[in-house]
Every structure is written in structure tokens, then in C-alpha cells.
Length: 176
Ligand code: IMP
Ligand code: MG
Image 1 (tube, helix red, strand yellow):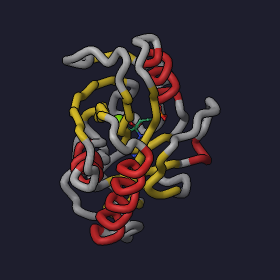
Image 2 (cartoon, protein in one colour):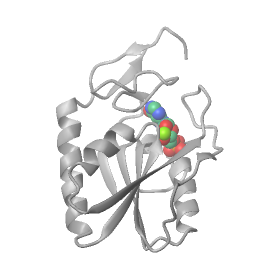
Image 3 (cartoon, protein in one colour):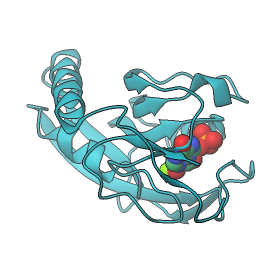
């Protein structure tokens, strides 16, 4: 990838993602009625989505974050996942929802799911902003999916290319 790439057309507007975050936040509120939920945001891409979802969750919640790296400056996964920042608090006996920006190959989430279930949570679910099924190399499904996207390199609303474009309020893709 080089500087010949530019921002493509808008795939998902700010209004659409905010509306979807509200739907999912309300669904989580219904499904976990009376329970506490720990949201584990995966840095950095999930931060904007996590913020919009949790604003719509009317439960006792805690927020925690993990950072993993699987890519360098490439747009395809290297297949290797490394934990860069672990949880601050224990999750044993807790309802945990992993919040991710996008499921592409599935390698990252598959690894995280195994890692976190090893800590004996009461329940463990996945909430992803985007699902890119065409990229899948490991079978894994998210419980809450914002939007399904085509096999393009997505940017904006948290998603980056080389750390750029995370601040775009809308979701787009890199275009040559
Ligand atoms: P996976 O392990 O291949 O599922 O990749 C998951 C991670 O790769 C995501 O958390 C993103 O950080 C990154 N990623 C995958 N596809 C895209 C994309 O289209 N745009 C930006 N980042 C992506
Ligand atoms: Mg990510």
C-alpha cells in the first residue's frame, strides 16, 4: 500500500452507526437484565464503537481494554497475535462482552476468545462493529454484529490504515 490510496465513498454514515449502536445497546440491556456486564474493548479500533454502544446500555457496567497486535503496516493479518496490553481487572464469574472493530480472518477474536474463556467468566460474547466474512480463515461468529461489509480495506470510525483515519465519523474504504 502506498500514498496512491485515498478515501473512497461512504459505506456507513455516522447516523447509521449511531442508530445501530443504539439497537445493539438496547438488545444487550434486555438480554442481561439485572446482571453486570464487563465490556472489553480491543484497542484502538473499537473505541468509538464501544463508546456509542455502552451509552445505550442501561445496566451496571465496567469497561476494560486489551491491546493486541497482529499486523505491522500491512492490510492482511500476519496470523500471529500478541497481547500488548492485558486486562486491568479479573473477569472470573463475570459476564464479558468483547468489543471489536472488525472480524476479518477471525484469528484475533479466536485467540482472544480462547484467552478470555481461560479466565472463567460467567459468560463470554462478542460484539463487533463490522464483519467481513470474505476474509475468514478461522470459523468464528460474533453474537452482535453492527454491519456486514464487502472484502475491502475499511477505514474510519476507529478503523485505521497505518494509524490514520480513525477519527473519520463515517465508515469508508481505501480506494486506489
Ligand atoms: P483478523 O484477526 O484478521 O480478524 O483481524 C482483526 C483485526 O485486523 C481488526 O481488529 C483490525 O484491527 C484489523 N483489520 C482487519 N480488517 C481491517 C480493515 O478492513 N480495515 C482496518 N483494519 C482491519
Ligand atoms: Mg483491531
